[in-house]
Image 1 (tube, rainbow, N blue to C red):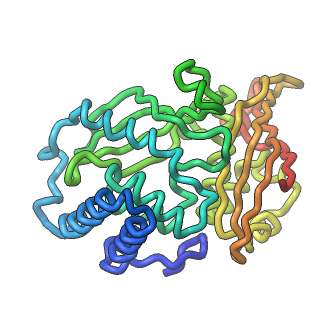
Image 2 (cartoon, rainbow, N blue to C red):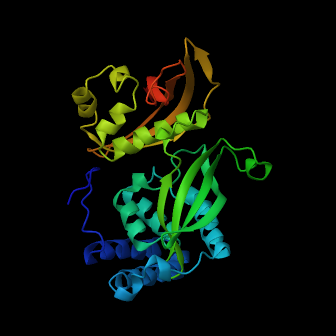
Image 3 (cartoon, one colour):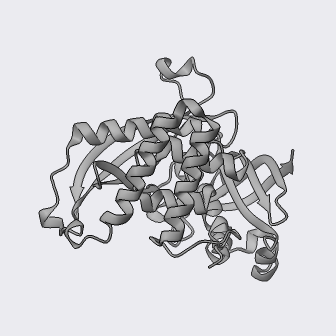
Length: 320
């Protein structure tokens, strides 16, 4: 089956996909000899994960699930956060798969690793030299439906010296799911909160931009188009023109910078969100863009819930 980004993906959980990941591990071991022991350990763990998924005893109900070990979970999530900077979305596919397997393999489930290797632009990683993901700041850990949910912020920094000073470029709220799978492992990762929650802060506007690119990356052009003001009208294109504009796009990822000052005019609020964009064409050509998106929401009496949400009003994007 061919994925939305053009890669050929095997059936989730199949021997073929497990073998593909093990091949990446072996290549990592051969390329980076100092990591041989770690890579082989990851290979063994992945093999065990593949077998354990077929074991009925592993499908315990939520009631039988172990309580959240907050100390162990905190250690896994914080190590995961510290590993993000070692995975570069700008690396060639083979190198990226190696980096992802080495950095994330011991910390996430086999299924999540399989998903990210099949579609790397869905994985949290470093896109640009600056800002870069430095760590994960955990806000809460709670049990839910047989797994443990972690609310956290990914802290992006501009320079190593800012780590201890506490000054960050931005905080990206995320929700992680952690479960027992041969030890505590991350099984889910998504941005939070949902921009449709009606949040009015400038950081919520940044989330809309990131959701816009998530939708494009997944081939959900209707969702992306609707994030422009006027149900897509502000894009200046019909939906067909908008969707056709991505016909040669295999993948895309975005890093948002610190939003500008929020301004008001004629019953509306506006904010500019700076972006750095990495796109990959179906011809395997890397493209890099930068610029800003201007987002708008209404504050007039009688405005609908949709009109009160941040939506893209205009864009100024240029290729680097």
